[in-house]
Image (tube, rainbow, N blue to C red; front, top):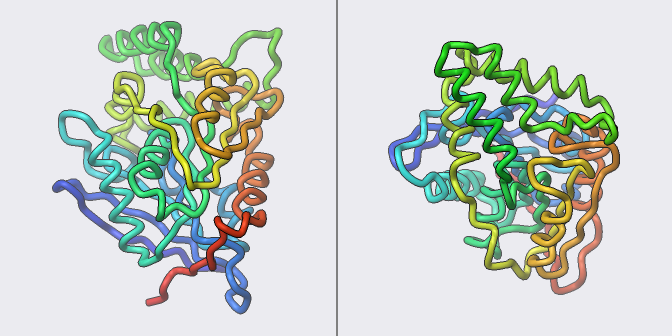
Length: 295
């Protein structure tokens, strides 16, 4: 079995770490550049087993506990975008590769898109899912109620409301494995509150309170944007409009899923990402894949 590599870094005085799962089948060239997977506050470096399984035979898989997430130090006061952008830059620099594939989901989509705009020449392909282009009042109201429960010491109530605010609970809009995903998300909130990831609540506050920058467009980077058809955090229609600002991008929705499409349709999402990252590019987009240097 391939042995993972854990590397520790620091930016702006904040310590964090990333994980590399080296590709299986090392006698053959990598099918694509290494892929860096960026998720939300509940998805640290060990939150992506389906990506390990589907992408591991194709290329090196890189996951991270970015500042403010998982085992990393908390984010400093003030806007987080610059710190997180520099954290991603430090990972790519440390990997020693000229270009990398980026997959960003939910809060991680904002980080990935921001970094792609900052360094487009270093991004081989970009995949964004559950893009929080617009956080509506309904979700903010859920979060305010959840925060009130937490302030009262009601962790169970907080976890339930926080999870429900990220799910589609409309019985007329079926969600595949929706109840299973809801229980998982709720349990993840409870684990975080009880010490597994001490900065999760602050990260979630930032995810809902910060205003990620999704304007300005992007060109020169092959991109795919996807959404669950019943995403209630940001509607698929708004995500489609965002995708249209990325030159030449593709957009699709996955059926019977909501914002947590990566849980409800985990295998389908992983296969979708793997297919996009390895599909042939136009001649002006193509470059030789680069494997990670070995130590």
